[in-house]
Image 1 (cartoon, one colour):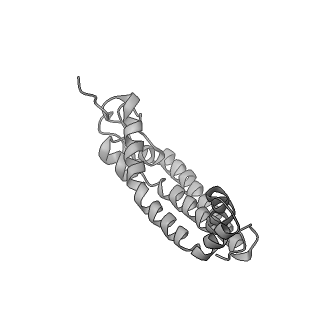
Image 2: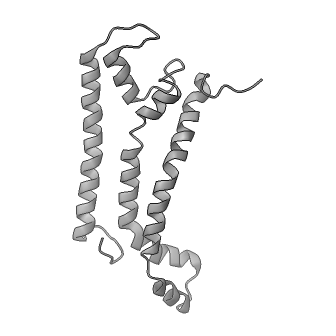
Image 3: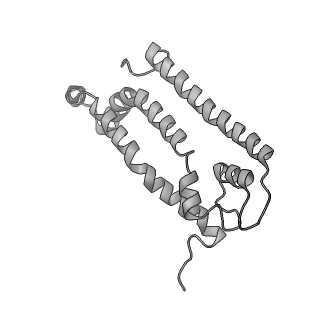
Length: 163
C-alpha cells in the first residue's frame, strides 16, 4: 500500500521539514562556498611547508577565517527558516490533525477561521501570537546585529581577520 506522506500525522511534519531543508540547502551552500573562497591559498601552502596535516589546516586556518561568515550564515538561515507559512499552507494547510501547524499557520487559522472546522475568527488571540512571533524574529535580528558589531569591532575571535 502506498505511503500517504502528507495525509498521515506521523509523516506529514517530517515531509514538510524535508522539503524545507531541500528548499534552503542551496543558498547557504553558495554562502559557504563564497566564505571558503576568501581564505588565501597561500596560507594552506605555508601550513603544508610547516608540516600541518589537513585537520590542522582546517582547525587553524579555515575555521578562524570563516567564523565571521559562519555566524552570519547561521543567523540568516535561522531567520529564513521561520518563513514557512507558504510552504506549509500549500502542502498541508496545517493538517492532518494540526500535525504541521507552525506558528504562522496558527496565526492565520486563528485570525481568519478554518473552513474545515468552521471556527470563528479570534483576532485577539491571533494578534497576541503574531506580536510574540514578531518579537521572536526581532530578537534574532538583534542577535545578528550584535554579533555583526562584535565581529567588526574585533570583539570576537576571528582569527585575525576583519569582517
